[in-house]
Amino acid sequence: MATELENSIRAAAEKVARYIEDAAEMEVKTYYVLVTARENPNLETERPGAYTVVKLDGDSKTIVPMREAREGGLEIDGPLFAIHERNVNTATEYRSRVLSSLVGLLQQRSGR
Image (cartoon, rainbow, N blue to C red; front, side, top):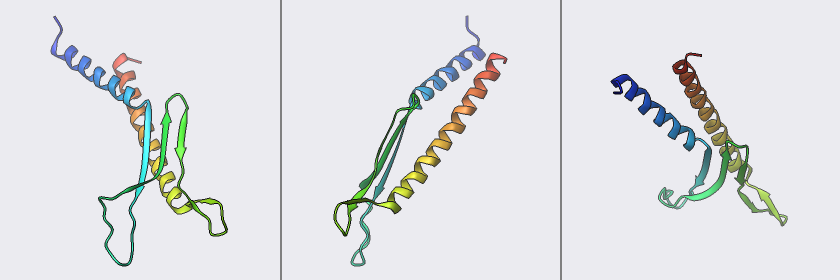
């Protein structure tokens, strides 16, 4: 018969396994709202600005914000993309810290 400690460890291990499965893919979405001098921004009408997905296997996808250039053609919306890059870096660092903590906990539990 399993003890209460074994049941707690098993439940914690299942939670960790679910988290690792969820962490296999990280999505960062950056949205914007239109701001004008005539009216307050409507925060309920957010629009997608940039998108990045990073998978543990190394695959990644980024959609960058573009706009029409004054002289024709397209140019990247640099300020919006800079905000998105900071969001991606923050999310990546956070995920790395959490996964490192989880690995440390697992190593402690296994007696290494």
